[in-house]
Length: 215
Image (cartoon, rainbow, N blue to C red; front, side):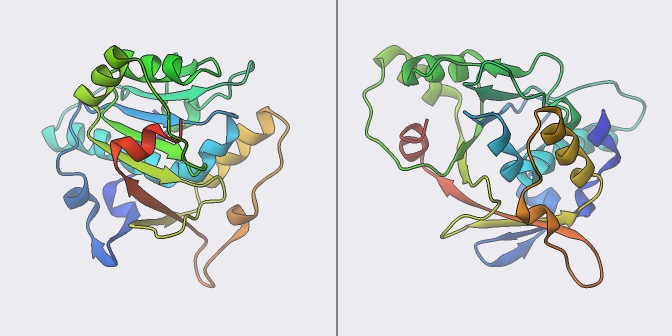
């Protein structure tokens, strides 16, 4: 539970241009909420770590609010198309939560539906109209509630949601993830405030139809 040291108060959120508390934005997030991060090439998912970790923190805050000890991991998954899966365990996508999917959109939809994902994070790729198997299309729509578009660079156009938090410990987690697959640090990791190093990433909420066109 690397990320269980974080609290909702460690995140500053801006939704539709207005500041919003972490607990208010995630008020519908419960212990059974399932999050999926689509990262076809593996490492582009670091561009969504602020939102992913805000979701993880909402999961742990729910347990802390109940009091007592707990030993739990959220049912959060990454979906990747590379042969060598990138390990997102440091972000508590663990255990066995990194899933390889083939370069086939129907198979990708099936993998996401199999895990009953409620919140899906997809990379900001050009949307392409696709015809999905009707059974799989219905399955994924049954559980999917919200979708967000992210960029591997941490910034999207027409953002609805901006999340800021201290660089550490996320900076170390990102560095370890990239180092494990011999990739260099992204430029946005070096972006800092004058007084306190911070991460800032932005996201755009998308309809289910829009998200599926980016699989």
